[in-house]
Image (cartoon, rainbow over all chains, first blue to last red; front, side, top):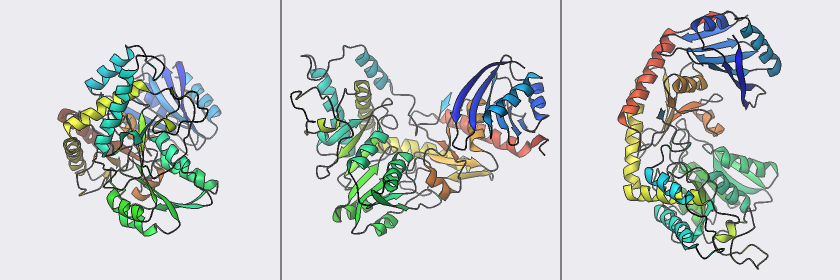
Length: 93
Length: 391
């Protein structure tokens, strides 16, 4: 999945960063399950527009809605490194 | 979109506010004292002070100073009092950071010693707890009228009776209450009243004010041009010019005039009842869910204009995200800039979801919101982590 744009949202008090990542295509169930293959995934499939939250412990947390084109990601610890890892992971989808 | 975040900024703005601001922006800017065409502008500034004075029961409208909002008003009051030598100040756990941060700054600098009165698990501060701490050395009591997290209201009149008798300055943060709850600076013995225009007074962002009682001396935060007495090289000390250096926020004042006029015409008690009914309907519904934790003052006279809640085992930031992105409902999640109250509510550090309707909020919008929460609760009870590859 190609990333179209990364927008900085907030610097958090604990040193983590929040960013909004927009993709070139809409988020599909397949992408959500792919994210889940690398950490902990919560997927509210019963919602009319399913919400998901994905946690890669110590690295990042991201949340979004199936059918949207953007997710919100909280980058923990070493935010730059965590972002680079996420980009590399998502690029393989 | 359903907007339930009126405790942050009210929306929608009344038509008369929008029309008046548009009309103002479409007219030439007549600068006070600098042209022969400034009468219209002077009229609206004075009229705005008059309607505010009427709403807040202030005898002299010129004791109301315009600011950019409650934060500037509170900074003007707190720093303007020029507290020093560890002056004793009392405040409460339900304060917003616009009170806590200036006071904590003064405490750090050694200018004050600070006593923070705790609140109960509904965010309510008992007036008696504040009064007990007022001693001979106390200079100032700073109290939030209405918690921006739980909606709990502090009994100002009880505290004011004591501060007035003991010659202690009584500063009230009315950011949430102005326009929501009746205020009377005389009956409540308030010396300094900080308010903002963009919440329940229906003005635009960037306008607020501070009432300063004649007997209280505070130093201006800023000095400079006033448009009059330009040959005088010090700040003119006449009220309200002393505190209003620089160009006035005329669109803000115009909007505030219309917003306050609307509150006066509809009647603040009528509006308070309408909002309290809306909130009570939501509380009654949500309290049926075992997994919802509500934060609000039960049996409060006049009800409450807002409340907070959490869903057990769910980060309020996630719930806020779901409401906004799945259901198109705007609420506020987090600590709401009032960190201490969450310790008493047991919602620290993640905070809560705050819901704050306005009198424009419809029954249908409330039904939609409650249905959304029902669906989310159903989803959280049936959805677990579907993968858990964490080591």
